Image (cartoon, rainbow, N blue to C red; front, side):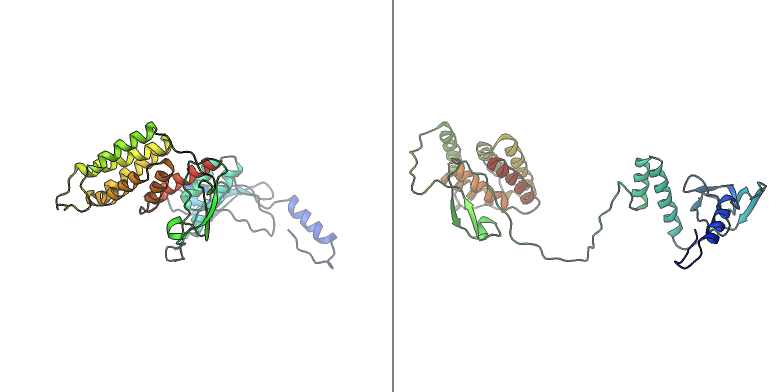
Length: 312
């Protein structure tokens, strides 16, 4: 290349450049011994030009010998002494050039594999970095969107506390029957009869006032979780119920039998008082969103997807 200013004469520099390009000083350059190019081949060298070619040794740290031909076509050899560096920069330069060479040759998978190994960015490979020492504020409010089984188009707006609704907004839409429209009296159904059978079994459990012994009954927590799973399966579709019951099983296994009893006994009594589908869904949603992570996050994703499907 030739650098010119607007006031320079163009004829002479262009003639010099043409003369250089027409007769390279060295051609057919190649490496000998245990050395490997990052690219495919060494470029020809012209007068006044500096060539840069990343190469690496295959294991034997010997001197580098480069062979080629001069401008007259005669064989030409030069031997260079290799020096050991205290940095891995030459290695990274070689890998970056090899990645570019593989990508240009259409070997995208090999290029990405080498980029991941060398921790270098290329087309098709990207990396995410984070600072573990950085501390940022985390929002305290959460979004709670339970699925409700109600007639479509019936809704009212109400003020709700963030502690109950888990919403950052000051208001949330709660779907309820219109205040001025009286609904017909519910008729007994097989669902309510089945629920009543469950609650009769729950009432047989010891009351909250009874003394709890130091030795936890192993069968009682299991019975509570089975009863809770039955309630979940009665108000949610099979796929969602399967996900939620698996969360209950993992949570109960981790926290211990006594805490399972202390948590599920009042929950099941509350479910017994609110036996209709809509109220049960709300009670169960509040229970899942009160769990610690990671169970709360998993349950929230299930409930949010359920809400989206119901709204759609």
